[in-house]
Length: 422
Image (tube, rainbow, N blue to C red; front, side, top):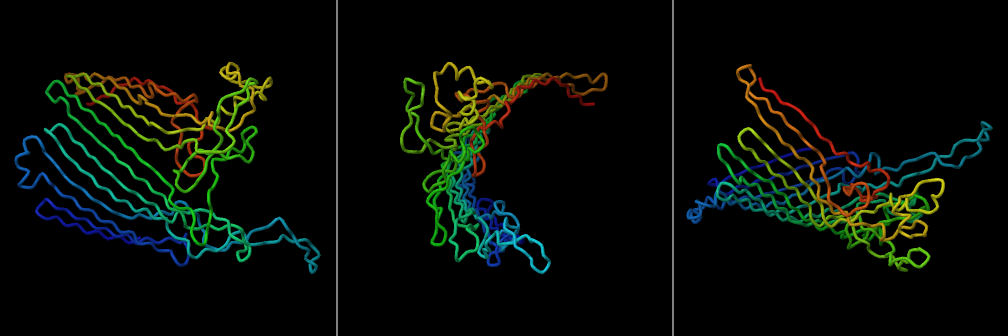
């Protein structure tokens, strides 16, 4: 990598920054081993202008920020993916000279000299302000576009020797808004109260999956292989116009008199894993030698596939295996089948941390501070999700947002301790 940066400040009110990265990697094709990634930003301290002087008694800071930049990514590609690779095949041939059967080797990967960096360009516009020396806030909007996404496409044979090829084709967009708010509510010698709030909303969309050379209308993902009765079934779709992690399947319309699910005849959009709102909120209290704090978090509007429940609610498990009591009471008599019935709203609000403490002073015996405290982790979670935990990983492309027997319930822990300062 080569990296250059320039900064310029004028009158302590106007600030410019420019950066250029030149990154190279042997993972990419011969035509695109290097990528150039520029960025630039501008900041304006509006509160320092003469015309803002009348607001100085209540508006302590007002700053406008605009930034644009491009970054490169190579995490989605392994070594040697741009090269032609040979591998041992299942076939063999007879070596008449040595009178033995030999293993046959054949191409297992097409070369792609045009394989290149995934790139993400992002535009940010933000405002920072401070009020009454007590409230500090940031409001930021952004537009992020990722292009040249890597995916393995089917290609014709011939002219290609292998039926698939890794190529840069797809485009993905994210846009959203973020709010950060820090407040010093009360600040006296005996009492201090402060709070921190973070709110964020993001909307994602797959913009492109095909070009003139590589084409695909849609890609099925979220494999349910390995679950009872789910061989060769998929729960998600990667499709233009939809976000990553979109569940795609049959809508459950109810159940008939025999307890069998009534399903719509055509597959449709069943929701996605993208939260409409994320939240983080915490407060700190201190009164003389006592202190108290808590931290909460939440995600709202996202869907999760309860594949664990879908597998356990199966009459074929009886009588050799257990099933949940709720299944026996539901009246369902249908074999397990993926549908909207198992795609649940996984919105949650969690009290993540709660702490209370008291500080003693024992200077007469050489201890300047002794803080006795009790801390709880994962105190409670409010959710309508019926699985073990609504906070399921939503990262990756293959199977995000699927609760599949691999999420151990989070424990609630309580710790007691003492901190000593000598």
